[in-house]
Image 1 (cartoon, rainbow, N blue to C red):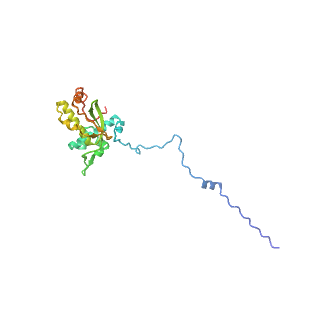
Image 2: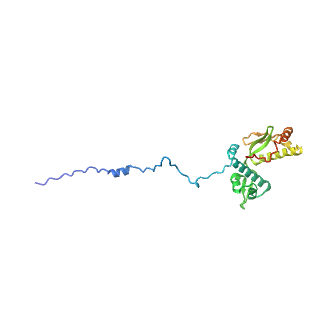
Length: 214
């Protein structure tokens, strides 16, 4: 009698080990930071931008020392343009580093092929100037060297009248239209009686056309 054939029993499908399945199913989680931890930025990664005010609101938001520095930088540009002197020399006259002037008023400068900085023929820098009004001195913000030059010329005409009584230089300012930073007309006081009254009261005895932060 032939021996009975043994039926091969099918092996059950192998189960993936718990270790393997846990590795396959699990994803690496990023390390968690503590509650108090935060990203730390190195000092070199943070660059403090030097503010170059473009509006009177930005200008007056600066500390007084920065307002004064900005005004001095604008003075440097004006003198360079008028007298053709170097950036280094003029900056020193106003107690500034040339790099500070370039940072505050660089748009008004042009670098020549020789590497020398010269003032452009005009600029659009903000200026906060002081002019007389019937109530006394008032501040007016303008953009650009051309408008600032006109106001400086007007101021000189006022001072000439107060010193000598000659009002001829004031005549052309009676109908001159100048606009402030907001596009509103700047009213220049040309009434001789009003100017004389302010001058007698010592209101117009100011040294600089530019607003002082002091």
